[in-house]
Length: 253
Image (cartoon, rainbow, N blue to C red; front, side, top):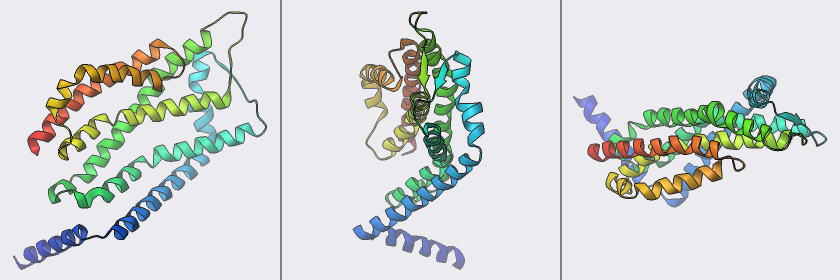
């Protein structure tokens, strides 16, 4: 009994200390969270550099091979810079769980004690949503987009893509899809803060669908309507899922 009271007293003391953090202490906390995130990114980039040939030859160039696209390097040392870019972007993907964890730990003083218990679960689900977006872009969006780009146009004009432009499209679409798939977790968090409600999301459903179509047009490369529809459909489904998650979060609150 005494140990339980001592533990509760210590928790209350820590919560009081967190509530009394000054502005400079918050900045110091933010600085360390950024350092931890960058450290994870560097470690992830080093791991990706070790397997850089596999990442490029087997994974990133596969959509081009399947679509029949012809790639070429047009800059001296262009491939070296591409390898570094791929390693950094791969490091971001690998360190996403750590980045999410540092973000939630930074804002945890603003959460209730019972809400802070779910930080680990939130990090796991946020990471899974991000990876789901990347896999969706890789296996659904990119093959259709590249096939359209490689086969479109006159037969007298060869469609040959610069490797830097190709990888820029590949990486940007995958990362964009990953962050877009965070919509359910964002709705959960905003509902917990009282900023978002299920009624509000249902009321502006039609407006959101129009915004989703515009967003899909910006996120998909070129003017390929097929890839825009392929991205827009799961976004609409994610919006409906977000309404359901917001409803559950509102009930628990």
